[in-house]
Amino acid sequence: LDHGDSIILKIQHWLHGANTKGVTLQMMAERAGLGDRTFLRRFQKATGFNPTEYCQRLRIAKSRDLLERSHLSIEQVAWQSGYDDTNAYRKIFRKILGLSPKEYRLRFSVSDGARRMAAGAPNAAPA
Image 1 (cartoon, rainbow, N blue to C red):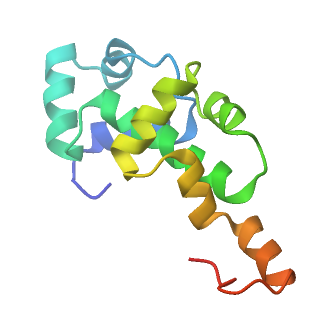
Image 2: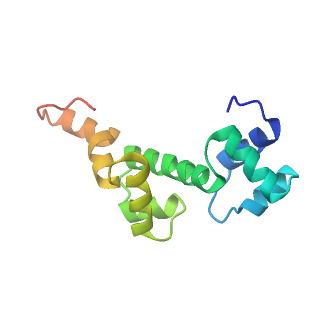
Protein backbone atom coordinates (compact mmCIF):
# COMPACT_ATOMS: atom_id res chain seq x y z
CA LEU A 1 0.00 0.00 0.00
CA ASP A 2 3.02 2.30 -0.11
CA HIS A 3 3.46 2.45 -3.87
CA GLY A 4 2.57 6.12 -4.24
CA ASP A 5 -0.30 5.81 -6.75
CA SER A 6 -3.15 7.55 -4.93
CA ILE A 7 -5.81 6.44 -7.42
CA ILE A 8 -4.86 2.77 -7.07
CA LEU A 9 -4.56 3.17 -3.29
CA LYS A 10 -8.14 4.46 -3.21
CA ILE A 11 -9.30 1.33 -5.06
CA GLN A 12 -7.27 -0.91 -2.75
CA HIS A 13 -8.89 0.65 0.32
CA TRP A 14 -12.30 0.19 -1.27
CA LEU A 15 -11.53 -3.48 -2.04
CA HIS A 16 -10.32 -4.11 1.51
CA GLY A 17 -13.64 -2.84 2.86
CA ALA A 18 -15.89 -4.44 0.26
CA ASN A 19 -17.04 -7.92 -0.58
CA THR A 20 -14.93 -8.55 -3.68
CA LYS A 21 -17.25 -11.22 -5.03
CA GLY A 22 -18.59 -10.00 -8.35
CA VAL A 23 -16.25 -7.01 -8.56
CA THR A 24 -15.02 -6.67 -12.13
CA LEU A 25 -12.10 -4.93 -13.76
CA GLN A 26 -14.56 -2.58 -15.41
CA MET A 27 -16.14 -1.66 -12.06
CA MET A 28 -12.74 -0.90 -10.54
CA ALA A 29 -11.63 1.10 -13.58
CA GLU A 30 -14.83 3.16 -13.55
CA ARG A 31 -14.47 3.81 -9.81
CA ALA A 32 -10.88 4.95 -10.45
CA GLY A 33 -11.98 7.14 -13.36
CA LEU A 34 -9.63 5.33 -15.76
CA GLY A 35 -10.00 3.24 -18.88
CA ASP A 36 -9.78 -0.53 -18.41
CA ARG A 37 -6.33 -0.92 -19.96
CA THR A 38 -4.86 2.08 -18.15
CA PHE A 39 -6.29 0.89 -14.85
CA LEU A 40 -4.99 -2.65 -15.37
CA ARG A 41 -1.50 -1.39 -16.20
CA ARG A 42 -1.36 0.98 -13.22
CA PHE A 43 -2.84 -1.57 -10.81
CA GLN A 44 -0.30 -4.23 -11.80
CA LYS A 45 2.57 -1.75 -11.58
CA ALA A 46 1.48 -0.54 -8.13
CA THR A 47 0.56 -3.87 -6.52
CA GLY A 48 2.46 -6.53 -8.44
CA PHE A 49 -0.81 -8.37 -9.08
CA ASN A 50 -3.58 -8.11 -11.60
CA PRO A 51 -6.93 -7.12 -10.05
CA THR A 52 -8.29 -10.68 -10.13
CA GLU A 53 -5.27 -12.06 -8.28
CA TYR A 54 -5.44 -9.22 -5.79
CA CYS A 55 -9.11 -9.91 -5.06
CA GLN A 56 -8.40 -13.63 -4.71
CA ARG A 57 -5.70 -12.87 -2.16
CA LEU A 58 -8.09 -10.66 -0.20
CA ARG A 59 -10.68 -13.45 -0.13
CA ILE A 60 -8.05 -16.00 0.92
CA ALA A 61 -6.90 -13.66 3.71
CA LYS A 62 -10.49 -13.50 4.96
CA SER A 63 -10.77 -17.28 4.81
CA ARG A 64 -7.49 -17.68 6.71
CA ASP A 65 -8.94 -15.60 9.52
CA LEU A 66 -12.11 -17.71 9.54
CA LEU A 67 -10.10 -20.94 9.53
CA GLU A 68 -7.98 -19.71 12.43
CA ARG A 69 -10.75 -18.32 14.59
CA SER A 70 -13.97 -20.23 13.85
CA HIS A 71 -15.35 -23.73 13.77
CA LEU A 72 -17.16 -23.21 10.46
CA SER A 73 -16.90 -26.03 7.95
CA ILE A 74 -14.55 -25.58 5.01
CA GLU A 75 -17.62 -25.16 2.78
CA GLN A 76 -18.98 -22.40 5.02
CA VAL A 77 -15.58 -20.67 5.09
CA ALA A 78 -15.43 -20.84 1.30
CA TRP A 79 -18.91 -19.36 0.99
CA GLN A 80 -18.27 -16.57 3.53
CA SER A 81 -15.03 -15.75 1.71
CA GLY A 82 -16.88 -15.22 -1.57
CA TYR A 83 -16.51 -18.61 -3.25
CA ASP A 84 -19.54 -20.53 -4.53
CA ASP A 85 -17.42 -23.47 -5.70
CA THR A 86 -15.63 -25.20 -2.81
CA ASN A 87 -13.31 -27.08 -5.17
CA ALA A 88 -12.19 -23.83 -6.83
CA TYR A 89 -11.67 -22.33 -3.36
CA ARG A 90 -9.49 -25.25 -2.28
CA LYS A 91 -7.46 -25.06 -5.49
CA ILE A 92 -6.83 -21.29 -5.17
CA PHE A 93 -6.08 -21.61 -1.43
CA ARG A 94 -3.46 -24.30 -2.10
CA LYS A 95 -1.97 -22.32 -5.01
CA ILE A 96 -1.52 -19.21 -2.86
CA LEU A 97 -0.51 -20.79 0.47
CA GLY A 98 0.84 -24.22 -0.45
CA LEU A 99 -1.56 -25.90 2.00
CA SER A 100 -5.15 -27.07 1.79
CA PRO A 101 -7.66 -25.19 3.96
CA LYS A 102 -7.87 -28.24 6.25
CA GLU A 103 -4.08 -28.41 6.63
CA TYR A 104 -3.99 -24.67 7.31
CA ARG A 105 -6.63 -24.98 10.03
CA LEU A 106 -4.79 -27.86 11.68
CA ARG A 107 -1.59 -25.80 11.83
CA PHE A 108 -2.88 -22.37 12.68
CA SER A 109 -6.27 -22.64 14.38
CA VAL A 110 -6.23 -20.48 17.50
CA SER A 111 -9.15 -22.32 19.06
CA ASP A 112 -7.65 -25.74 18.25
CA GLY A 113 -4.33 -24.81 19.85
CA ALA A 114 -6.11 -23.53 22.96
CA ARG A 115 -8.17 -26.72 23.10
CA ARG A 116 -5.03 -28.89 22.84
CA MET A 117 -3.29 -26.82 25.54
CA ALA A 118 -6.27 -27.13 27.89
CA ALA A 119 -6.29 -30.89 27.35
CA GLY A 120 -2.59 -31.06 28.21
CA ALA A 121 -1.69 -32.58 24.85
CA PRO A 122 2.01 -32.80 23.99
CA ASN A 123 3.27 -30.15 21.58
CA ALA A 124 0.22 -28.08 22.40
CA ALA A 125 1.89 -24.75 21.68
CA PRO A 126 0.36 -23.06 18.64
CA ALA A 127 2.52 -23.10 15.54
